Length: 307
Ligand SMILES: Nc1ncnc2c1ncn2[C@@H]1O[C@H](COP(=O)(O)OP(=O)(O)OP(=O)(O)O)[C@@H](O)[C@H]1O
Ligand SMILES: [Mg+2]
Image (cartoon, rainbow, N blue to C red):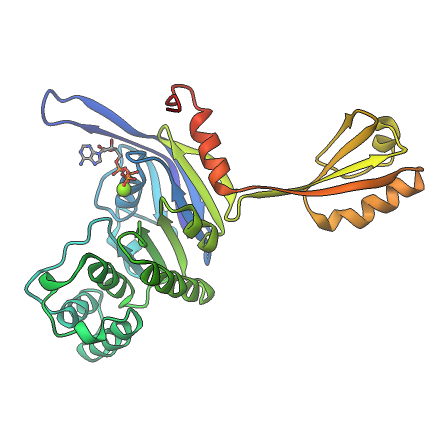
């Protein structure tokens, strides 16, 4: 649904025309109905990537497509909702007027826009503030309004730049539930976040943006594997038994067999037994997204020294 291919982008400072190469061959894709999280340090290029998709920043090279249409064509954004990093709303409008206005901009009729506005303001719990001017809204209220604005035209694709920042714990949970509902409905979602917990709860996949490209992709929950210790069998016999393992290694007297999933365990037990071996211990191991993230950042050449 979303596809970025070998995107390059260099910014030139106005002063001295100094170049900053921000994206250097960035590629990733988001399937229809998938939720993809873009992770990366401050300044890694997450917002720039989203702006390229939105046609707000022009890439120097590569291609960005939404639903097969290049992002340079406004038609690609017909069914897209966007929540910007720093939402700016016309301050003199009321919340209700504002969401309705965005609905009209997205092509809804006056009646559709009013109906959708009422529904969404209730959904983001801004109903009681609907008639207040936006300039009197708190930061968290503006973030809720940004959600209502992004969703008003019932988009198929959502691009959300740090959607859960600025919210109190209750608000974060509520907006997360809202996103999970949209995900269940089949909306394709691309979002950026620094909050690993949110990523683990929401994302099907996550990409780590570093040095201008996606260096690593992981499942939303991080990586899981199972370590099995076996006795009574040597590595050669185990290899001959055609055990489908990620890795087989000797650990002292024992054999350490790494499996991708617990599902492979019964078959391994049978195979080992038939060759005279037995399982003596099973350990579930898990590397969280946070582990992967920190590892990925620290293992890069030129990574910062930990303080
Ligand atoms: N219009 C611009 N002109 C010059 N440099 C820019 C411009 N927009 C972004 N940059 C630079 O591009 C780099 C990437 O910025 P970007 O906002 O995409 O990062 P980010 O990953 O979204 O960071 P954060 O997590 O802080 O939001 C930064 O070094 C930033 O200074
Ligand atoms: Mg950003």
